[in-house]
Image 1 (cartoon, rainbow, N blue to C red):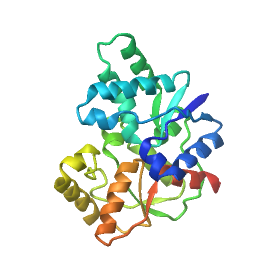
Image 2: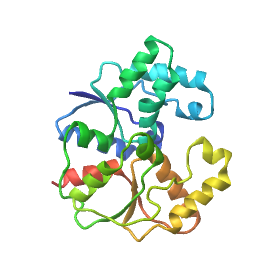
Image 3: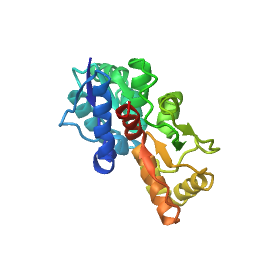
Image 4: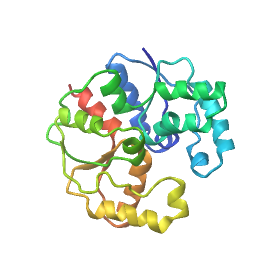
Length: 241
């Protein structure tokens, strides 16, 4: 099995450790992992802004970069949903390009989804024993990819306790372009998340954008709670085994 890591822009710039953790984790599970250096932005910002021609240009490049791999794995629900859900939408009715988009879509998985659904692994180790964590379900991972149980299953089976949170499935308000066009709404949504956040050792998510948005707002409000990308914690669980 040959897997390509799609690191994503935000992960590359702000959560490089999560990218490294993803590679180490997958290799520890017997997966051959490659990192195509030609990868760039998936085109989601252009797509969300309505610039579909520009998004298609980036999508064509991405489809070429990830040809020949059995799977493409992303430690991101947001960019994962762009490849899996919206690439076929971008190229609908365009014949060969549409088929290429569907092919990539079928090979694309968010990290925890890949570990549980493709590899069939539900326990990575006991390295998170006794950790109390709050988990934020990012919109794209939850609503577009259907990633809901996998992160919780892997964290809990590694010994972590996921604390109840009434707003864990609510949007954080980031949404990329949305947060720029409607900043007051975006901030209000983040504040709702923060106001209901239970006591926990860390706030965890599989989406770097959500983590950055919530971390920035918590810092402005003087409520610093450590944020952790899911990939880093899963590697901790595995590495301590």
